[in-house]
Image (cartoon, one colour):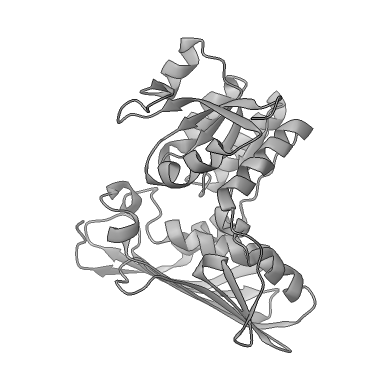
Length: 310
């Protein structure tokens, strides 16, 4: 633990927090985990609270919070934390709407606090090498295949298919976060087709067509009911070779030849970045992936399918 480590509270201790945030914080030099906000009960070894307001009123000394709740309720919690003078790190997607994120950024800057909208998939080992490689080439076309089984990766999480839960875009936004990092030009949505179970408010599958820099075609296929081996792939055809990122950006191939990618420490890197931002008094806010999801939900053609049940 570093001598200047910031005291941090983890808000929302569900699957992603237990699997990723807690291990990353256990090895962090920049943060000391001192509290947890968890409506499902206390967390062993930590001062625990049922809600954020109770923590703020308790008098416990906290410098920052990391919000891992569902996105639909994250805006109110982040606003409360910023108003209390805390630095805020947001799990992806950062909020339910771009408007909410812009308001949070304005509040953070007015109060001299750090706001960090994280995109963990950008920290996968192959992402930065892919970005550097593509910067020297002309993009001709891009194909995204992002398919997984909601029952395996989000068991019993009904919120994800309700209004504000984003449905298949909860994992799909990881692909969009990688695309907006590795591609040098602007992405613009041209069309989308969305499948909604007749008992849900968010899509369970989607097809998207985008353009890159007004020229190259980008096709994305997202499926939340895929029962085979998860497929998180991005293929980029260029004027020379073809780049392929697999396993969510963890492996990189050029014309089917594997290339060395960086180490995979997604959440450790995110917390190091959060610590650096706090130290320099900066914010890091990127809404591009969320904006593309909003565009798809606004412009996409809706198709009804059979009801879904966990």
